[in-house]
Amino acid sequence: MLVKNPDIYALIERISIHYTNNLGNRYLRQAFMSMSLDGRTWELVAGVTDKFKYFSTQGFHLDELYDRIIALARFVYSARTEAAPNLRTLLASTGGAGQDRVLRDMAVNNFASNLGILSDLVNELYILTVDTDKKLNGAANPVFKGFPELQNLGRYLTP
Figure 1 (cartoon, one colour):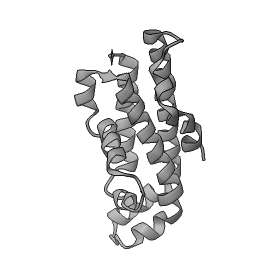
Figure 2: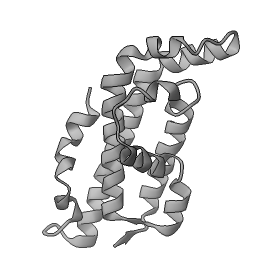
Figure 3: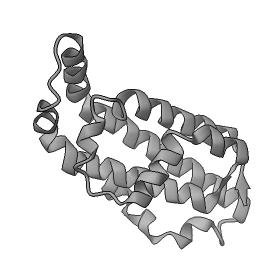
């Protein structure tokens, strides 16, 4: 069933803008190479962060939306546990001088708080999606029951 909820689209757009401006920028992308996320997870993250307009035009199936929520949560968890502890070391080799160095240092210094904002937005998307799911499918037969990994969302999203 296609979801065409404008609140969900607006939230996905906020996630995309926040990710693109604050996490997926040229100063931090190199650090993500060290994370142990599989290709499918990266594709799903890109589906929200880079290609959200395409999916928003078509609409989202609930199962696709839950897959993307899980992928974003995995990203947050991996970024927090794998990239963040070594962020300065990982990015030290990028060098840079002047303004580039200042911008890189700003991205590094704000990484944890920007990751926290992304985590909150993903959680908000999950709650909104579950609410929409229950309205569309009834409380007895929601789609989210078919995604056991959603039980790990709290562990993925909290520090």
